[in-house]
Image 1 (cartoon, one colour):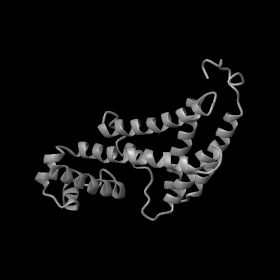
Image 2 (cartoon, rainbow, N blue to C red; image 1 turned 90 degrees about the vertical axis):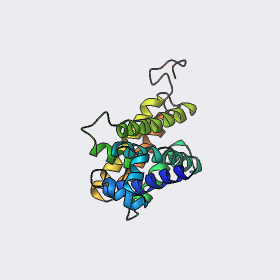
Image 3 (tube, helix red, strand yellow; image 1 turned 45 degrees about the vertical axis):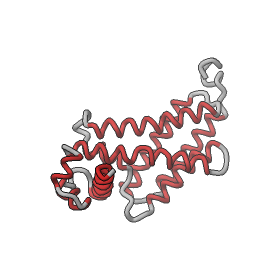
Image 4 (cartoon, rainbow, N blue to C red; image 1 turned 180 degrees about the vertical axis):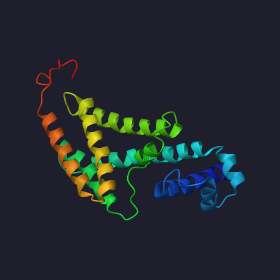
Length: 202
């Protein structure tokens, strides 16, 4: 149990540092100091910085997805409004002075020249889980082309992360949410036949 607690303390410390300062700017020495452990203990649990970065993103994966699902489920209104609510909540988060954008996207930008890095694979898997969840939700609501719509929403979401980080203006996320709601409303009015699909493929 103590070993697990030490590992969790290291990941928690690394998560705060990596998110606040960036991957490359943070040394293993800084993580050890923040976690209150020796460097030897740090390397006992994580034999490389690459593995620690991967653990940092893994720790963000399910909590982030669960938060998106909760915002969607608790929102009032129809499907378009429920999708918009995800963007609205994110825009509120972006107004916090310590907000630094999407940890997955920021990490992928820092590791863009290392496509095989374990953290890149975790980030890609996280984004795909969000996309798949949206597609399943849209399919259950009778949307004719649920995966295509899910990818459009995912693009709006990630684009808004980038725009807000660049301009420091959370309203970009709100505008992206309005665009997402419009796309979902339009798709909801499209029948399988109008989309060029047979009922068996819808």
